[in-house]
Image (spheres, one colour):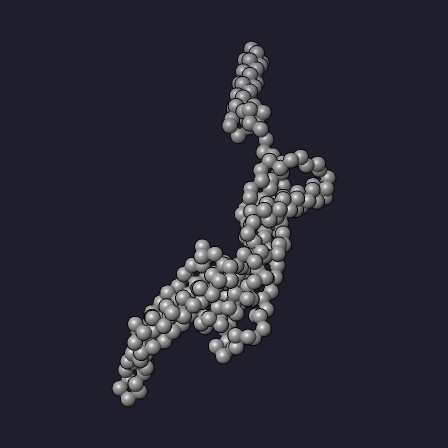
Length: 253
C-alpha cells in the first residue's frame, strides 16, 4: 500500500513538472522579444552603402563686374560733393560712350564723411574737411574690353582702388554639367566598394543634391593718379572659372 501511494505521488509530481515546463515554453514563444520579423510582417533591416560624389567643370569667364570709384575732398562738404558729382558724371559718360549699356551701370556705395585733425596741445580733434566717396559697378559683357574700361575710367576721373570679379553668363549650363560629373563620381565610388566586398549593386535608392558653389575669379586694380591717359592698356587676365557640384547617394544590397 505504501508503494502504491508513493507511485501515485511520483506520477503527480511528474505531471506537474511537465505542465510547468510546457507553460514556460509557451510564455517564451509568445513574448515580444522572441517575435520574428516574419511573424510581424516587418522586413529585416537592409544593408546600405552611402557615398558622396563631387564634380568640377572649368569655364572661361565671359562676363566681368568692375567696381569703379571717385573720391573727392574739400574743406566744404558741399564743394566736395559737387566736385565728386562732376568727376563721376565724366566717368559714367565715358563708359556709356564705350558701348556699355546704362542698365549695366549701378551705384554700389555713396558716402560723405568728415576728416579730422588732431590738436596735440588740447588733445582734441577738429573737422578739417570732408571726403565724398562714390562707387559704381560696371557689368562688362566682353571681358576683352575690361582693361580698356578701367583705363577709360581712370583717365576721366576715377581714382579709387577696386576689384574685378569674373563669372559666366550661363551658370546653370555649367552647373548641370558639374552635377552629372558628381553623380558619375558617386556611382564609381559605390561600385569600387561593392566590387571589393563581392556584391552587385542596382540603382541608388536615394540621391540628394547638396548644392553647388564656384570659385570666383577676383582681380585687384589700383589706379595710379599720376598715370598718363596715353599709357598702354591695363592688362587684365580673366583666368579660369570653376563650378562645382556635390551629391549624396545611398545603395541597398
